[in-house]
Length: 248
Ligand SMILES: Cc1cc2nc3c(=O)[nH]c(=O)nc-3n(C[C@H](O)[C@H](O)[C@H](O)COP(=O)(O)OP(=O)(O)OC[C@H]3O[C@@H](n4cnc5c(N)ncnc54)[C@H](O)[C@@H]3O)c2cc1C
Image (tube, rainbow, N blue to C red):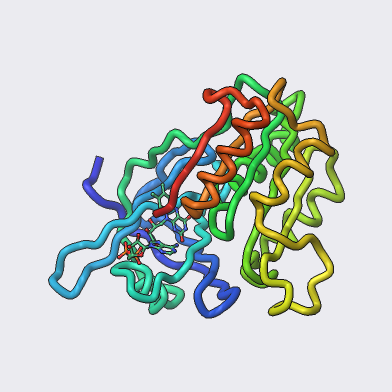
C-alpha cells in the first residue's frame, strides 16, 4: 500500500464564504474502501514543505466512485485556508487508510442523528448508502433515520437541505429536520428554528425514537455533543447506544 494517494478536485460548490462541498477523484489507484460514517485524512503541503494532515468525514456513499466532503473554513486554521484556494483540477494528498468508529450500530434499526452544519457528512454517507442498497435490492428492511441538522442560517446547510428534504418526501424511512438558530439573519426561512439540542427531545418523542429501540448519534461541535449526550442520558438511552464524533 502506498504511503499517500493523490486525489484531484473534480467539483466544488461554495454554500457561503466559509462552507462548501468538495468532491475528489482518487488518481492512479482505486478509491480506498470504507464503511459509511468513517473519515479520510486529507493533506496539503505547508509553507515549510511538510504536509498538513486533517481528518474529514466522508459524505459520499460507498457506491460512489468519488469522495465528497462538506467542509468549513477555519480562517486562522492551518489546512482549511489552503483547501479554500483549491480550484477544480488541483490535487490533494489522501491517506490510503480510511478509519473511524462512528458507523451505524447494527443492533438497532432506528437511528437518531443530531449534527451541526458539516457534522451531517457521516450521516449523508449512511443515508445515501442505504438508498442505493434498497434500489439494488441488497437491503430488505431499511433502517429508520431521524436527522436533526442545524446551522446558524439555512444556506449553511447547503445543497444537502434540498437533497435530504426531497428524499424524505419520497421514502418512509427518513425524517429530516433542518433548523436555523439565527432566524433574524435569515428572514425568508420558513422551517424549524432553534439549536439542534433544543429540538432533540421534541422530535425524538414525537416520532418514537426512544431509548427502547434507538441509537443516538451526535456529530460536529463539541458543546452541542455534550448537550445532546446529556439529554439522551436523561431520556434513558444506555451509554452503549450513544455515539459521538467531535470535530475539534
Ligand atoms: C473525526 C473527524 C472528522 C472531521 N470531519 C470534518 C468534516 O467533515 N468537515 C469539516 O469541516 N471538519 C471536519 N473535521 C475537523 C477538521 O479535521 C479540522 O480540524 C478543521 O478543518 C480545521 O482544520 P485547520 O487545519 O484549518 O485548523 P487548525 O489549524 O487545525 O485549527 C485552528 C483552531 O481552530 C479550532 N477549530 C477547528 N475546527 C473548527 C471549527 N469547525 N470551528 C471552530 N473552531 C475550529 C481548532 O480546535 C484550533 O484551535 C473533523 C475532525 C475530526 C476529528
